[in-house]
Length: 216
Image 1 (cartoon, rainbow, N blue to C red):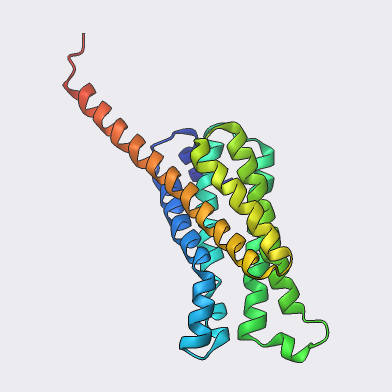
Image 2 (cartoon, rainbow, N blue to C red):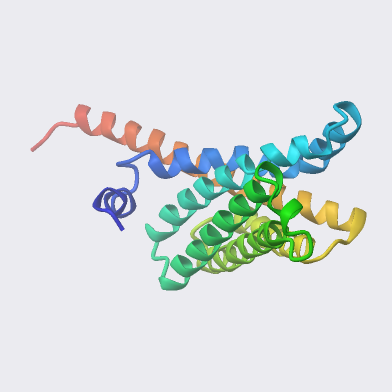
């Protein structure tokens, strides 16, 4: 990992980068959770079912930045190699999902390879790998207590629901599980942002007190 990231990890509060990434994760989780609504709007309001899916890669991309923030936060509190594995699995899933989305909705590859449908398969595989990697990472995050269970447990449950939702089509129940993944991700990311802001304010207040204290 680059030295700048290591500095941000080893000296909490020195860099705002993890907290900014976590803030992106809040936005990505919200966009993911609003996906069913986006599909309905693009289908019934704009008469263009594929319109939403062409814009969808923004959600997992922002969530990947959010996961990076969680990863740096976790590493700063003793996250082990398994957390790194979970992060990279999730990152691979995002790459596959974005690539499959581009091939399916922008390049029209499946219109050429109709029987094999490589873009669609890559897209669905990427979503599953992303949810599975996030689930592994969230499980370790919850077990370490690096983030309060009130923040990490919803991510565990949401990531599990997301993995189930993208594994196969479960209709309305699957849509609810899809939404749960986005909500859990956004909630956990917002908890980390809150912790970062609270720590920054506490360190700033402590610094002001130290400047006013006499030195003997």
